Every structure is written in structure tokens, then in C-alpha cells.
Length: 325
Image (cartoon, rainbow, N blue to C red; front, side):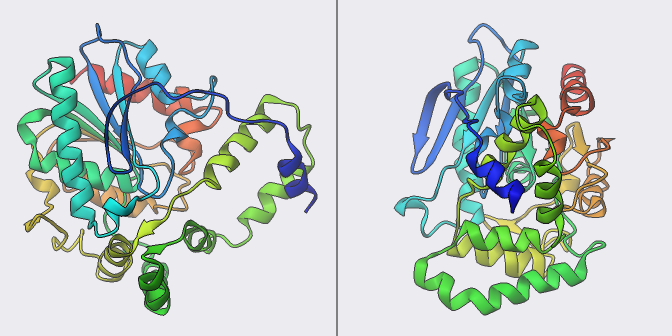
């Protein structure tokens, strides 16, 4: 409780301003982090349930601003909290929205094909979109992207599906799965993690850069967004319950999402200490891709992107790999 109070009272606030918004539809925005003179466009796709700024956390820990300094032109999808327009959306509808993003970026940069980076659930959306637009994709980077939801985690997957069944009536009533409920689901993976991290935080000097980073990450974690009811049903029943992606049964617009048909270079990043996406689940996706390279940083699901070693273990290897494609 001391650690929680120190966190609540900490004066750190994220002050970075978002860059230019170049496109909006419903709750979705496309943010342009690059220079129009740069001809290496990269579309960055976060999860639906977390804010986009995990890629732009602070001046010191911003993957996309670092990419821009390295000569890339990053465009970041900001899904936002679902508006009335998205209330009836399926996962496939979000994938189809990315089709428009891809065309817009290609036109804006005058590049016939682009690279794509997807993170966690955003990686699955990126996979679905890329298969629908093979001729427009140069390469695909999948960060901690699940695929085999029953690999090394069937009891948890079954529990997620069962939890949804128990909550389905309430979810239908409010037309969404609240972010607080999602937080409970993820916390169940390691019930004492929250206690451990706040006890540790309570014992540290709150004015160090590491303490500021802790507060920044916790602010992001606690700034999640809900899933609309139909998307929650697909995630819990089909992905977790039936393991539809690994079984070849997940479809977008009536077509099965089959990674074996993605004949472009792919980099699959599997953080070794990931509690959210078990390494076996992400590796299973990589094994289906014809032209795959694996990267396995010694990090967790979030620390991989914004941890103190992220530049060395993720940012640079990803940039180097993209540069060779």
C-alpha cells in the first residue's frame, strides 16, 4: 500500500504531444511520426485494448521517435476507445479498417509497399491485414503475437473462455467488456505480481529515471480501453476457447487467416519472460511463416518495448532487420 500511495502521489505526468493526425475514422486515428522526405514507411499497430503510446511513452523511451531518427517514417495506429460506430464491429472489421490505413500510407509516401509492425493483438490484426494485401507489404514484424492459445496454457485459456460465459449477459447489457475486467484477467496470470512490483517500488528513490519510467508504464497500463461485445466474444470464445487461429478456423471476411500463405520476410519477436503471451504461443505462429526470423529478447511483454534495455535488445535489432529487407 505504501508503494501504491507513492505511485498515486508521484508528480510525473506524460507531457509528450501526439504528432500530426493524418486520418481518422470512428475512434481510430493515424499518427504521422516521420519526415515526408523519408521513403521507408512503417505502419505500427498496437493492441485494441491498450493505448498506442506504449510506442511513444516518453522522450527517453519512444520506439517510434527513435525509428524516425534512424531514417524510417513511422505511422502509428491509435485505436482509441470504441465509439458508437464500432459498437457492432467484429475483429474482421478492425482488420478491414487497416486496409484503408495501408492504402493511405502508400499514397502519402509514394511507396508501392510498406513494412508493418504489430504488437500482441495488434500483431494478429497485422497478420490478417497483410494476407489481404500481399502485394503492398514489404515485410512484417510481429512483437509478442499470440497464435496457439492452447500452447503451454490451456488451463488459463479455458478459464478465460469460462469467465466470458459467466459475464456474457453483463457484457451484452453494456455492449462492451470493460478494461477493468481485462486487467483482472491479465492479473490472474501472476496474482502476486502487482504486490511484488509495488513493494519493490516503495523501497526505491522515487526521483530516479527508473522510478519515473515505472510511473509512466503504470499510467499506460491503467489507461486501457474496453473491447466491444462482439470482439470480446471472438477473443474469448473463438481464440481462447476454440483456439481458432492455430486450428486454421479464424476468418476475416470469410477467408481463413493462414500465415503459411504470407510469402514475405517476417520477424517474430518472442520475449523470453512474457507472462501475457507464452513464448510457445508466439513461436507457433513463427513456425507457420515461410520466411521467418526469430528474435528472443530476455524481457517481458511490456519491458521488451519500453524497458531500460529496449533500445539494445529490440529497437536496434528490429531496425537492422527492416533495413535489410
